[in-house]
Image (tube, rainbow, N blue to C red):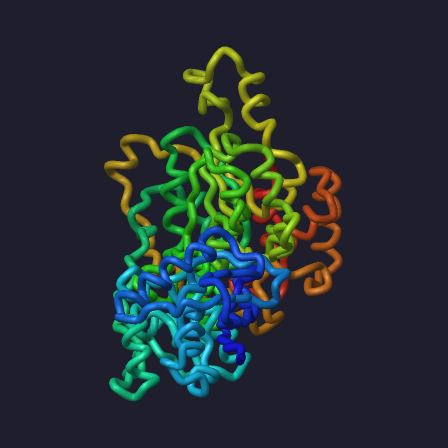
Length: 491
């Protein structure tokens, strides 16, 4: 009475957790039982497996079939357990050789005709299989996706029958190859933005140092338009960053055509989004917008319209670069290293400060509108800039500005200086990385007292000053760099 063992994976966030699918067939009343904290989708795999085998002309024997998913104290979720369960049963019925299967991990969803459907987390499963020194069996359409996880033996099969033919030597499956992925769509160009030189300067500084930024201006001033052009100023993701971001999208089932993500993601959730949608979580825990913006940009338009608990939940990820989701049955950490960009009107009516158009409830209108944005959250924002609308005559007559590719070259050079000097962008450095001469230090101290900056506020002031100096190719922070940085601390 041998027990068949097939390796697959559960997922804690994007990290693979090895799960052994144990199949045992014994005499007794016919039954098909799955144990091991399986959720509804996993227990339903009994019927999918039975139907898939029937479509191949294979009937389950009139025996007691017990499937244990070990370790049994981890909740098993998802449909990717279909394939390892089916393979284990085929081995238990002596239809498929177990010796060959022991060199692979497997995951895939079975349709009723035995075809293999796409599942989430293939890249993480590939990384987990490499750690276990095994190959990976996955759906045919995700073969190129599995290759992203490491240099291992990948079997990408269109169906359960094709796998059976492969392991019995009737028709060997060919190895998957990287597909010719389509180029990502081109980002909107900064060249299209007329005027707004001060706002474009703030955007350049934010892009160069990876700084968070808040734009305040009346409706139609161009806040969203500027934010949408930030990705065009950012360099492509490094191979390590690309793999990390692609893993997150793979685990969330959002990877188009199994193509690796090479451009920084830009996420712009609606202000009606809940805290769970922003941070991640839910009954079946999934990454939220801050994780989908990993190594990219999270843009929150109409910032005060977001739920207060959603905004306050951003405070820890902005500082640490990850989000920990604690539940009664699990504790999951997702990466969330993102550049936070936000936009808002000066008040609810949008025209505070404009004597011709502001409403009669000023200043109460402004106070009520900005109440959701707490001081601690504002203290975590490096640049705060006011956006002035462009006059109608200027929209028609003013010449367009620099193209994104020209500004991006300056940003790339400034970033290279930062990485060479401190192996990180300026948005991560602390005061130990910054040296000031006596005159500049006195200026910073005086300004901090006048603006009543916290220790965090002073650090962020110095970070922005360091970025401004890098854009000017200066080796040290000078008075002009600090003076410009101070214009972005006032609110």
